[in-house]
Length: 308
Length: 213
Image (cartoon, rainbow over all chains, first blue to last red; front, side, top):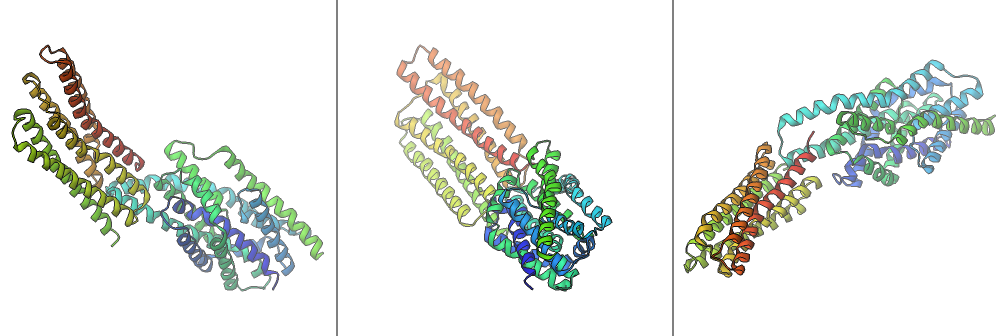
């Protein structure tokens, strides 16, 4: 059972970092207290993982045949990559780290399911594109609805406050549903955990990360996103949640961080302003290549030296 | 419950603006009497009424501010409403200080300027009336663009009238230098009402722009 520790570690690290995308704006703009935000985040992550977290587990499991040792090595490699990227202050995509780690072990064992890999990589690129498209559709649509309602200042601000909180809860749900496969997905394939146990353990470990160590990242993300007005921030978070949720249903773990960058880019397109720095876009490109590559090398080394 | 506290604040803001209206009406009456019957002993009582109505408006504003903080409204609404009220609250203060200035300094407008000065007072009151309506519109979901444009136009009218009046006061051969300076001060202080109305309007427009989709 010690092999599960790497999964819990990965889940904790994921929760500590990615919950910021859901509630950063609401917390930083004082619409909700940090404590309340992380509790909501934790609850909805667990619900999302339990209700819709199973589809992604089949996808990750399908990339390479897993054993208890390979599952441990891949998850540990992904967790180490996530930690390294955190230390380097680079955006983390545990989905990309996990896929890199799985392929690293696959290469070592000479077995990688390329058709499954194509699905995953296509989804990575489709995430920011999807959130841009969702933003381009939702912004004018919801905006027209709000204008038609002719709300007074208090009602309007109150609706947006609750909108941000609901979008944050939905984002947390989507995070749990989509990313729990990264955390404990491989253990279901090896038979160490049932699907229910995997979604519960994965969801709880992500929730623990959100509860115990998400404050700093939340403030950083909030500071960047809060330059958006509350309506734009609501659309950005909601679009991200929607797209990540769709990928959870399809069964492909994707990055919420890259989803939110796409949303913010979309807001920039709608409003005709530059919302994202070139550096952030380069980070995404690096995430697509660098994160899986580093995880691949870690997984290769861990599996080779510990289990071969 | 969710909407009750917002409604309560809107009701109080309406009550505050009604109180400023009382102050405005007392101010208008006071100025007219001080111009037409400067020695009338009843002027003191009307002056007191201006003072009392200004104090009441001030008390109401403080109550609203406390309620805005205590009832945990979201920061955007709170900041904008507080800013608007604080900027607006200078106007009843101007009504009061102008009334006292005329009374205490025993300023007498010469006949040829009296009507023009009263007209300037009315134009400045009009600027207040317009911005008052616009501020209220923010809380009652009204389109206030036409009103804010009018505030600009009225403020500009007031500026022209002030300049013309000051020029004519200083061209007058019947007044000595000291009187001219006193009258100029009164004219400028009266114009401050529309200047302040314009500042309130600017804050209002910013609050609306911040929420524009």
